[in-house]
Length: 26
Image (cartoon, rainbow, N blue to C red; front, side, top):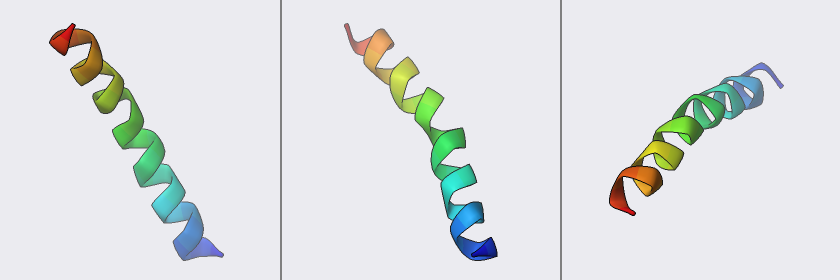
């Protein structure tokens, strides 16, 4: 459970970066 939450937190942290990359590439 705790590990899963850590993974989810990491994915959420990475999410804005992916959005920024998409915005930059357009």
